[in-house]
Image (cartoon, rainbow, N blue to C red):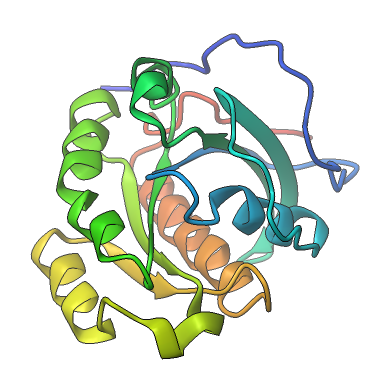
Length: 205
């Protein structure tokens, strides 16, 4: 079954869009997880190579996009950064629709954000299309001395739930590009096997 299309939201991009003259595919991503774990800065780092200390909580959703080259194919990633507060959970659920990749994020220095992953994963599998690629992101490796969640524990969670796993730092950029690039590679691989996977797929001559 093909995934349904985008949300139809006309919100303007929050961050700069690194435009290319053409792209072969458009992949919709969604970033979810508890508040204050650095989702907005992960997006900002990927799109603009910037980091904003003490950034404000996301209200509703924010949006950014960037084109990357994957296996000699130009891919545009359309990334929706969602609010982590419980009061915005119903809004967040609407943005799973049409997403081919979901990044479920936690803060390695706050164990409570790791313990929330099961709930976020449940939402993702309930509200996304069936073959969505799911990536587990442990953010804030620059604060490793304050770590409350071991790499091994997170890796075991990812393996148990068949997730890609990366530890990142939105501040230094560590593994940020890699997480997006490797997940896009996997989405593209799935798409080549099943062209109906991506409801947002766009081919450009």
